[in-house]
Length: 211
Image (cartoon, rainbow, N blue to C red):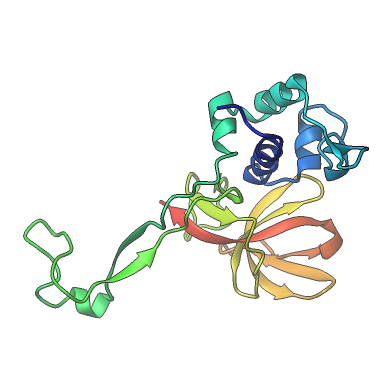
């Protein structure tokens, strides 16, 4: 089924968010004019406004720049979202008691709660850790999940931060003011970094880590 005008632009926006950038940033990465995907470019004059579609060339270029297939791009336009994923949850003290695990060591019986895993959305993506600045909590090769749609960062949070220079960091927020953020490493060999707010493109709390 062909995509509607709204669905096609939704796919562009979701692709940009999945890459951790704005639609403007996505256009620039693809070598297009930064304003190519601006909301003002999506409709022309008229009453009602006349829909404007992204060109085949511009779509091809953003797919090449992000390594996304055409089928995956089309899936981004889909409004269907999977149900939340959960796994059984038990406290360490209870885990030492009888009746919570079967002979294979799998959850059984009553008393289990549920942990909701991060549900994929158009603003959720994963970053692979490099270096040892967050060791031993996050080791090189670990994958962390962040959600750009949840900017609720507070002091003490472990975050992924993208700076205006393009540098992307995994750090812990030790101080947070209107003017600056102090980002610390778990590894004491790395000193804290004081970063002015104006140099931060975005900062998102780490929701999950796969080790």
